[in-house]
Image (cartoon, rainbow, N blue to C red):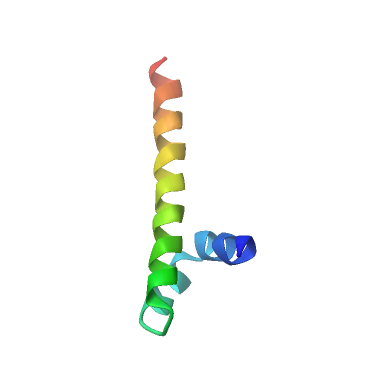
Length: 51
């Protein structure tokens, strides 16, 4: 599962393509996790710059 998550995080275009293939809910939840972790990293980065 972790390797699938990593694969989806690395290849977002593949993730978006796979939404239309099958296991839609799983792909969407993995995509949200990737997006959330990306946002969190950005917020931490911005916070470091401010302080």
